[in-house]
Image 1 (cartoon, rainbow, N blue to C red):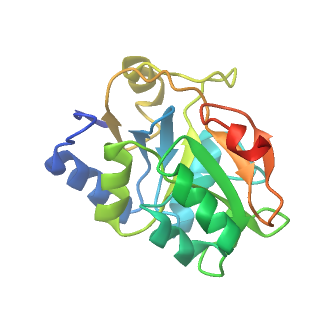
Image 2 (image 1 turned 180 degrees about the vertical axis):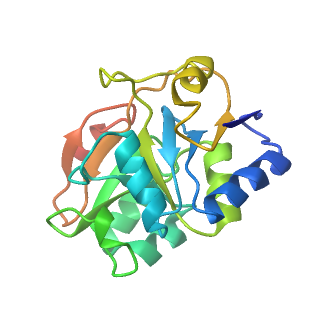
Image 3 (image 1 turned 180 degrees about the horizontal axis):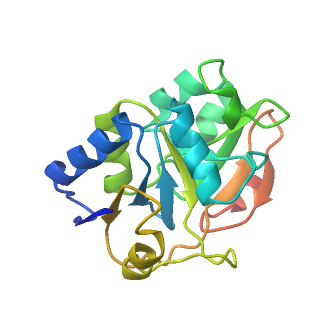
Length: 204
């Protein structure tokens, strides 16, 4: 596994470009978000998606979210109502995963049974720069150990996943907790998981 340490606010583009090259070649990486480290790949590479599911020891039944660069990008991969747009404009970028109706461009492997997808725009310059430079969304699933516990320390992550992924972009120890998950698939929002993102907006 290639391993690079990046500045969280001004990430070194040469390391971002190395990760982009790996992703374009069907590789799997680990990268920081505003909550926890994520395992990621290009959402349009089937073999890479299969590898991510294998690493997570999942059959593909669990919904994997993916990272978009901004609101405009989200509209390419999900059906966004006026209400959902206003809500996300208020809260993104930030520690939220929004459930939205899937657009046909998204591989069906990432769809839920309800034909929805989970989308993130994290407030972390490494993740956002990575997606912008790649030009495609990347999968976002949290880095956990065999007990399904979140791993925050990059050195521990490197030791555990050294032979499972191709590259890691490190940016210090992360302590953000999991993202809040909010279903915006219709105009009645539902908080699925209360995490790092403040969900009081949906209870007013």
